[in-house]
Image: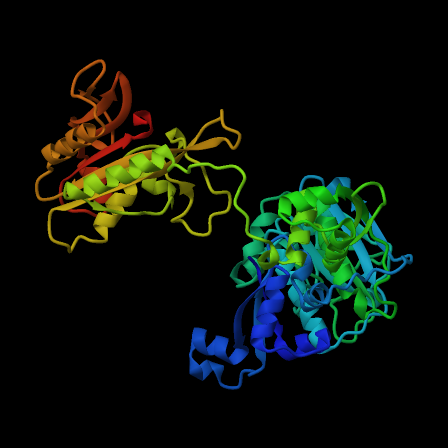
Length: 564
């Protein structure tokens, strides 16, 4: 859930009254929010960087409020105040400057752009800070770190329309970027920002593209090079009166949602507040539907009042128990009748819903795979092995090169934009994680006997998502001698627990196999009822060296799902 930080006194001033911390916590709960923390800028800096750095920081009380991830209208002070005051403020529309663009030149890189203008707006320092912070919150949330949508804001009085959204080769784009003193080409900017702590995280979005998106005004002045940086010429300030907002995107629906949020949240500071022309839609549903789903028994008129309280203007149509709900552009989270029902439940108060015994009686059972897993864990620990729990993500090197295999041969699911080299792919085997655990605990007394029962992820074209989870059991024995007999004994004990007898056909047996991960002649496949379910053996010396180990090691890995 996103966390919004607001100054307490500024919030109370906007709400028109003061609350104790307990009262405000209760108020948030009534609207499905949570007061997560009461702190100050000084306290935050002191906690993160020490008392020395915190000297001179502000002591103003801050409320940290957790809001639902799909409530983009609550990501700033203005939206929070409007929601908590139950305000439904959208007057008759006027004719604002609004445009939706689609450029063929940008088709391959960032095809969509929408724009609007906030006219005659008055900024104070607090309003300006909230305006900038909302952009950042949206960028991190619905915009997916600018990969889906990027927001640009400009002083309209410094530029002139009409505006052109196009794409050009990096060497053909030249302008003075925000807070810089000279002009750079787009190629130079990409090199300049590789060391920038903030902007370097967005370079990957377009740096490999043959052309970069760019927005010009009628005089050829560059407004921005989305999603990286705006031009310095049109930057906004406290003195800005007319704000031109542009959103470029790979998803037009999300672009419009983001633009709606920016316009609706700050139009209250314009000379004519709450006057904009945006799409409203109406939905109809029955009072019976809401009563049944929430577990209440209220009249149609009462339910309409509850929904209006949540900024969903509602009224009974007079046709049976039908309710017509008008959904404003600020509520992009309302997709289905169930979303409307949820708002009715929040307005009614979850604590006010009468506790009732469910009409349908069911007996819960543990998921069979998890039940088998838990039983195996207990008995494997009783056998003298220690359980380990490792990350589901790992590096390509861990599951391929270090095990003597090629990454192209692995059915690995790759992370499209990994943050570190340690988390590039979803693991296809549990063995590397256990070997790295041993490497980190080499100073512990020998022998080291570890096991793990967890999921691996494998590509599977037959699944909707293109991949599937597979529950695996892996064990390793690390000592001065390989200890193959120990691992073999653990296999026998496991099969005994799973009630599989040692026999060909309907039982289990092992058969010699070749695998680059294991020492030649010391590797075997495990067959259960004629099906290959795993492998055991003595690890190859090269594998041991690549994991920075110094002693022999035996390992066993098998799939446990066939035993259900």
